[in-house]
Image 1 (cartoon, rainbow, N blue to C red):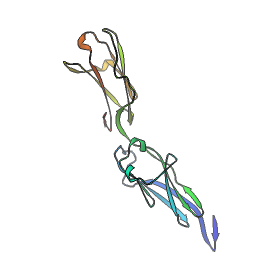
Image 2: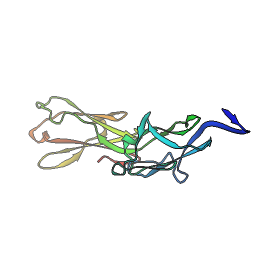
Image 3: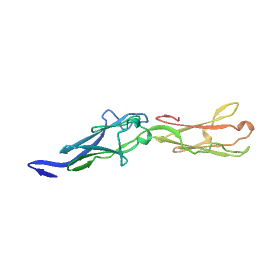
Image 4: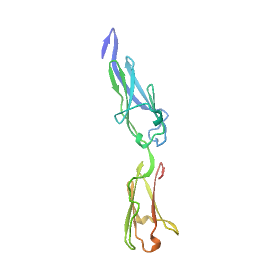
Length: 194
């Protein structure tokens, strides 16, 4: 803090807030999000920076990141957009970083990568087939179906176990017709697995 002829100079005090028309509890993939950086500074700020998880954000229209004055717009957010956001105001006295704002981006379930697709199982041999998804919120329901060349059937709930975002179905082929494809689907309050 410096005083010149009764003019008080100070480093910027920044406060980050989510756009007033947005509800932080309902942001999902594809939503446009904006933040405002409210700054008190004497002298005025000459620069405002934006950070995501501590990394500097740059203006990039192609990636849907638009910085204008003291506002940040994120177009069509994805799960990678989730995390802590801050803004930093700079004046000739120094810099001031805002509070952190955690952006929670919700999305419907998607399959986790690198899951086993083909299982070799003998007749009357029990197989435990797993299905893992990523989802936010992680409260998911699972549905399994069995398909062969003749029919498609839902797997009975008694053969299905669930733990968080994982499910396991216990399956025992008894005849040739019991060989085919087991399919897993997950659903959360955002939607069905894509």
